[in-house]
Image 1 (cartoon, rainbow, N blue to C red):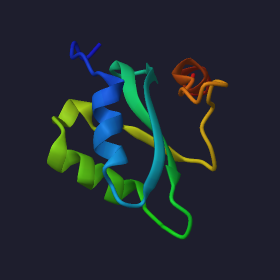
Image 2: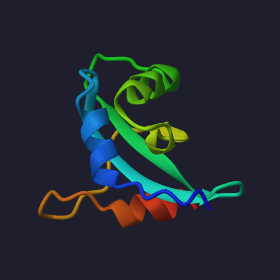
Image 3: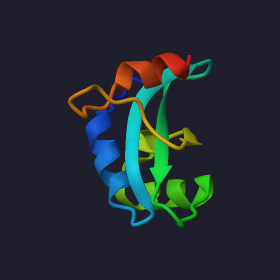
Image 4: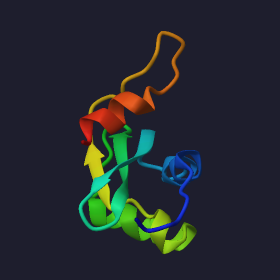
Length: 96
């Protein structure tokens, strides 16, 4: 394990501040080398494009290196509760 604590909300706030990002969810997923790695699931605003490299470069400017998502998945939507709260556990389960 890397030994570092990463708070998903902190990483989500940075990614959400990128203009092309509509929604984001972050969770730890199993990693054979570190034990756990940061993964971000990202929904882009309609008509916008963004590459994994562009997003990671943006994160590197605003976060410590160990907090930058190792994995990024672009998707059409994120799992939400009926109250509109992100279901982070569902995302993490998908990442296993």
